Amino acid sequence: MAMSPIMLTAWAVGKVPSLQIDGYRDSSIDGLDRVTCRTADGSVITISSPTTAEAALIQDHEHAAGRLLSAGVRERLGFSVPHTLAAGLMETRRIVVTKEVHGTSLVTLRDIKPALPSLAHALAKLHSLPTNIVKKGSIPVNTSLDCLRDAAGIIDRAHQTTRVPSQLLDRWDAAIEDTELWQFTPTITHGDLDLEDVLVDGNVVSGIVKWGSAAVGDPAVDVKAVVGPTPPEVSAPFIEEYLASRGATDRRIGHRARFRAELDIAGWLVHGVDTRDEAHVDEAVSMLTSLLASVTDNPAMSLGAAAPKPVNLVVDISRPASDESAFEDNAPTRVAEPIVEVSPSPAAHTPPTVTNARAVVDASESSRTEAGGRAGEVIIDAEVEEIQSTIAETFFSREERPPRRDDSDIL
Image (cartoon, rainbow, N blue to C red; front, side):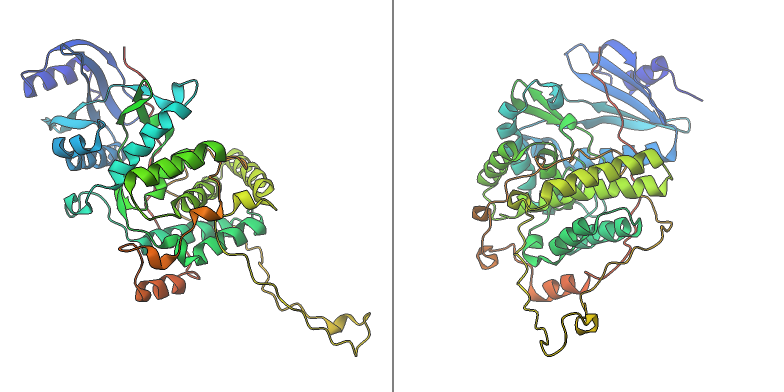
C-alpha cells in the first residue's frame, strides 16, 4: 500500500513533536514513497518509506553515513550533510525523517570555477577525518590493495567485451602496474560524488548530498568528480588547492583520479553489455574512441607512468632480408575473446562525464614525487609484492548499485 504525503507527515509530526510543517509536496520516486516539507524555521525535511528492497538498502547506507557524520564531525567538515531526525515503523512500513541541506546544485551555476577552491577545501577536510571514527560494519572499509583489485577487475571485464581499443587496455594495464600510483592512505570518502551532489551558497560549498556509497577507500574517487568533466586548466589548480589544503603527500592523486574517470567509461560499456542495451554500448564505444584520440601522442594526458624502455632488435644479417622467417615477433598479442555474461558493474548505471582530452588533470612532471618521501603513506614491501601478484587476476565481483535518485529543488 502506498503511503500518502498526509500519512507520512502525520507520522513525522507524531515522532518529532517540535516539527512544524508549513508546506509540502509529494516527491515520491520508484521504490520510495516520499514527501518533501518546509518547516516553520525554514528547514527542509524529507519523510520517506521504501517500497522495495533496493530502495531500503540505499536508505540504510545513507542513514549509516548520516550517523557517521554526526554533529561534531560536521562541525569539522565546515559543510552540511543530510542527517536523520527520526526513524521507526508504521505497521510493517519503515519511515525515516531526514533533515536536508540548503543550497543550489553546483551544476546550475553559469561558471563553476569560482566555487572549485571551496570544493577543494571541503574534500580535503572530508579526506582528513580520522578513519577510526568509522564503527565496524557501518560503511565499507577498503585498503589500497582492495582499490587496486577493483580497478583491475573493471579492466578485465571491459577487455572481455572485445570493444575496448587495445591501446587503452595497454594504458590502463600500465597504470595497474605502476605501484607508485597506488601508494596512498585510504580515507573516508563520499564514494560516488557528482558535481550535482555539491550544494553551494554563492561560491561556497554549503553541503554535499547522496551519501549512499560512503566508504573508506581511495580519495581519488571523489576528486575525479572535478578531474573528469573539466579541462586541465581548471582541474590542475583544483588539485593543487586540494593538496595544499589537505597537507597530504599523495602527489599522484590527480593521475589516479583521471585513471578512475577513464574507467567509468569502461564500466558504462560493461553495464551496456550486461543489460544487452546496444544504445549504452554504442555510447560507451563512442566515448572510448574519443578518449583514445585524446590521449594518443599527447604527453599532457599521461597517467604518470614511466615511459617504456626502448627495445634493441638484433637482426641476423647473414640471412636474406626477404626471408620472412628471419623475423619472429615474440611480443605478447592481445586476443579478442567472446562476450561472456558478467555481473553488472556497480559504478556503471550513469554515463561518465569524461569524453575527451580536456577532461583530465595536467600530468606535469612536477606533480610527481619520490615514493620514499611519503611518510605514513608507503605500502609495505609485502603488500607491494601482493599488488604486483594480483595484476593477472580476473573477475572481482561487486554488488550492483542502484541508479541515482533525482532529487529536485523543493517548492
